[in-house]
Length: 361
Image (cartoon, rainbow, N blue to C red; front, side, top):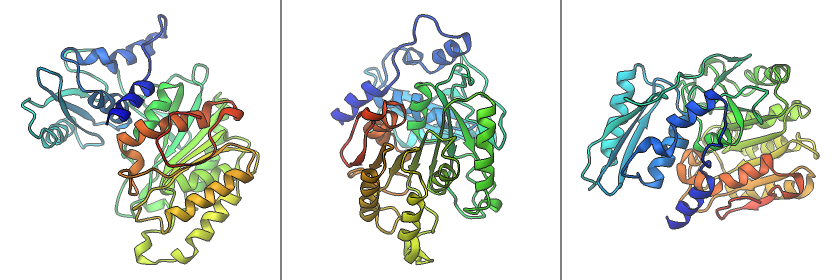
């Protein structure tokens, strides 16, 4: 825990510079550490609000409980049917996390508005098939470092994941200058290849809008598709971040998983050696990955072959499972390497296989 808190201090954004655009200044005020007031909350509670909650989709709410010493419990919810439902879910999640803490859970934020404090409206609209991440800071192509397009996973035709929150490390990319768009697909039209043309076709629109650098990222099927799209349009994509990329269903069901590793090898082979940069995260205990160790080794070999920085993250326990990248401790332990992968000069970018926590190169 002590190591995680030290990493957190490195990763959380620094105080705002003396002069920032008015919209950004208002945004920073909503999500600043000063927003909590005394007593100071725990570092993890602050990170949950500033990194994890900001990836939510309205209707969203964040609930917080603190005792006199600042010990904290919290809960949040997004994508609810109404503001009232979001608040009820956030309070319920907070109460479940109280444990022995003697404090009352209260609603701390509704969307990007703090009751009795500052607030901003969620970002609306988008570009082509992509919509803006509503609670993340939107700077525009002239002011942003670039834009990240994030794709969610696939839960089957009866499970709609279009309101799934982006993982906390995406908020950290946003803090470092990247605008964030969501590639949300209807579950009834989300075959691996069915929605791919929408993703690749939208990339040119981002360039036309003025974005000079484009990142692709995604979880599960979203990550698999991000690599496919980068292979088709390497001229438009700067880097790819794929967490637990998958396209074959649960490995225990045995549906065409005999070819899963060969398909993954071919997926990687589609990327030109000179770019885009690539980061892939695999997890032990992933029901959609038949052999994380083998995939990690495959990625390590690919990193040695490519001139473009190529990084494989295979987190050590207790991080595990198909959704491991959405956990706050993944961001606190590994986001530094992801930031360096997409932003550092080529010679300084991390490469190869990493298991232990990393904060950079």
